Image (cartoon, rainbow, N blue to C red; front, side):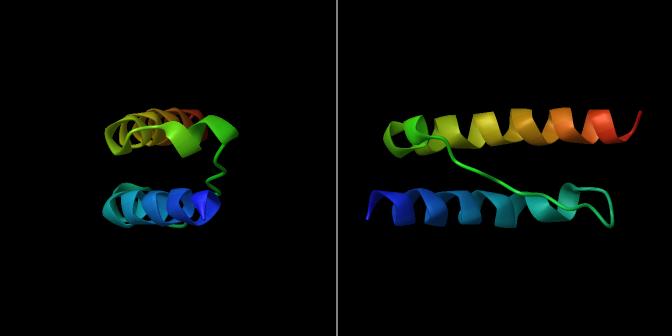
Length: 60
């Protein structure tokens, strides 16, 4: 149940962000165990940080 809740939360967060990624981007989002206890806003912030870092690295 917890795993599915985290999966649903991350899927919802990615749905709002997918259009802001560069065309042709491939993204794999993997939740670590601490994600099960994280607030939705914390997951959103950490996902934004990770996506920003990935986009910056890809543009180098």
